[in-house]
Image 1 (cartoon, rainbow, N blue to C red):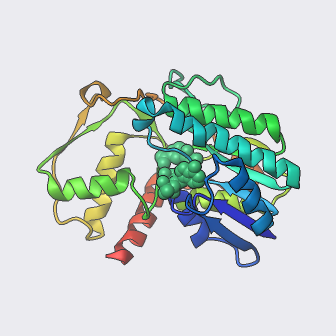
Image 2: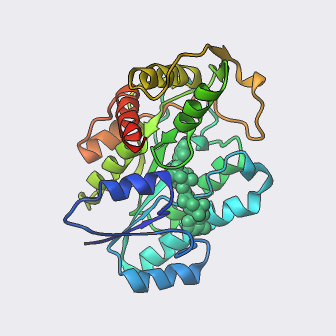
Image 3: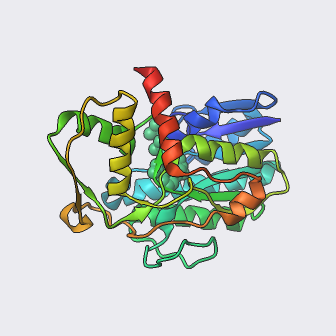
Length: 289
Ligand SMILES: NC(=O)c1ccc[n+]([C@@H]2O[C@H](COP(=O)([O-])OP(=O)(O)OC[C@H]3O[C@@H](n4cnc5c(N)ncnc54)[C@H](OP(=O)(O)O)[C@@H]3O)[C@@H](O)[C@H]2O)c1
């Protein structure tokens, strides 16, 4: 089976490649080889790689920049996703597409189900939602998985930013009133590979690690575990601050915990607690030092 992973230089694609099953012929392409917003390039890539399955991890993910760069965000997140769905349909190729918790407004206090009402607060979430809707409309047999708070040893993310700031700063203030679930990209990659092996699975799913945390809780755990593992020398004070004290161009949902039940049933996997996953990621990161 030929699997084409799109978005090669991103966090999730890195973990997908690291954990790709040996029995699959897995090829990854980055933006320089395939710009998904260009339909001709998508067509050409399908002719060249002859995929049976396409996994789209590519996206415009700069949440704050998207507010002033709307056209670019939609070109990748809506048009790019639609292009892939269109060509997958023409070639009879299965599509697995990745989306976000930012399609929700965060006004709920219980985990979001896959069919709960969407209402993105910013351009990034709105452009991803437009992409999901295009994929569902063009190729209803696709798999779409919404995830949240993704990090990996590769790329830029909250964990690596915290480790840098904790080494540099005398103290930190971290937002306590935005709650979600951190997700190690390796865990999501494992879920995606499990679903690749189940051709009967289609539809919308939610996947994160297990549990709930605020950014503040997450930062405290990063510091604790990083000290235990020798990635940081000393603890600095971490203060909980409200999101209002850390204004950003894009508004973010205050509650974006998503319910994984149907994704667990479909894949046969149980989500692992985010703190356990964080510990594993820090072990991997330590090997790079
Ligand atoms: N990161 C999170 O916290 C988070 C949360 C929820 C959902 N998600 C979703 O999870 C998925 C994977 O996220 P990630 O964290 O792995 O993202 P990432 O690290 O930002 O990687 C995204 C990749 O997409 C590539 N890309 C951008 N525009 C492209 C285009 N026109 N054609 C082809 N490739 C293009 C980028 O290429 P360059 O390297 O050249 O820029 C980048 O390598 C995305 O769908 C994202 O929306 C992420």
